[in-house]
Amino acid sequence: MANPKHSPSVLVLFLVLLLLSIAASVANSDVFSKSLSPSALELKHEKLTHLHFYFQDILSGKIPTAIRVAQAPTTNTSSTFFGAVNIIDDPLTVTPNINSTLVGRAQGLYALSSQEEASLMMVMTFSFLEGKYNGSTVSVLGRNPPFNKVREMPIVGGSGIFRFARGYAQARTNTFNLTTGDACIEYNVYVLHY
Ligand SMILES: *[C@@H]1O[C@H](CO)[C@@H](O)[C@H](O)[C@H]1NC(C)=O
Ligand SMILES: *[C@@H]1O[C@H](CO)[C@@H](O)[C@H](O)[C@H]1NC(C)=O
Ligand SMILES: *[C@@H]1O[C@H](CO)[C@@H](O)[C@H](O)[C@H]1NC(C)=O
Ligand SMILES: *[C@@H]1O[C@H](CO)[C@@H](O)[C@H](O)[C@H]1NC(C)=O
Image 1 (cartoon, protein in one colour):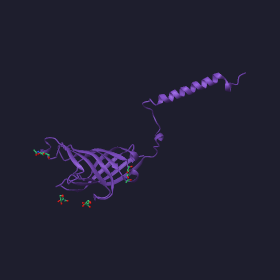
Image 2 (image 1 turned 30 degrees about the vertical axis):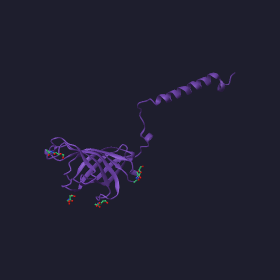
Image 3 (image 1 turned 90 degrees about the horizontal axis):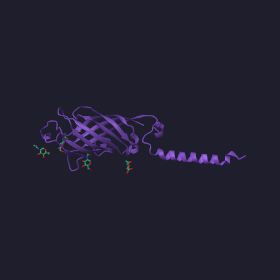
Image 4 (image 1 turned 90 degrees about the vertical axis):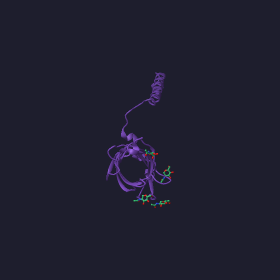
């Protein structure tokens, strides 16, 4: 009687199963979607982080950090500058002094988008440089009427440390020069992430 361990039919069955499992794993790489447990991405406890910094919006001088790239033909005659669009790459500093430690940059744009009052539609990414936050970002999308005492804007997502981010940012004007348009804005950002 043949030893079942060495029987040819068992070996053939084993090889067929091996080939099927290889074929299945190759097919898997073409799968469009599947559910994952959050632990597969090492997502454990959601944390709340508070970030505090000053946003330096410089329109004047040789190296402005906010530049007008577009406006409507009627923007000049609008008391709310309706239709103007600025692109920004604004330093985020640790104190109101523009020469204090740079903790990140605010890159994106704001558009004057109200006919009733001066109000900005903010579409920007805070890109951080400081310590463990270096390379991580949060994305802000919201309404910012700059003459209000406190403006609140949603944090709609993030990257790096801030993957799966949600939260809000509160902006308060620290200084605003009416002649040049230069402004220093205090930001408090509250963000939930893993
Ligand atoms: C509107 O503003 C632009 C850009 O600042 C300027 O070149 C233009 O002369 C202005 N037009 C009027 C009618 O003031
Ligand atoms: C920041 O540094 C620049 C260049 O060194 C200098 O011209 C400016 O006065 C400084 N500003 C402040 C507020 O310290
Ligand atoms: C942030 O990361 C960049 C690129 O990895 C590196 O060149 C830079 O020195 C870092 N900055 C700080 C402040 O750690
Ligand atoms: C606004 O900026 C102008 C030009 O740099 C300067 O002369 C003036 O003192 C500034 N005003 C305030 C309130 O800082």
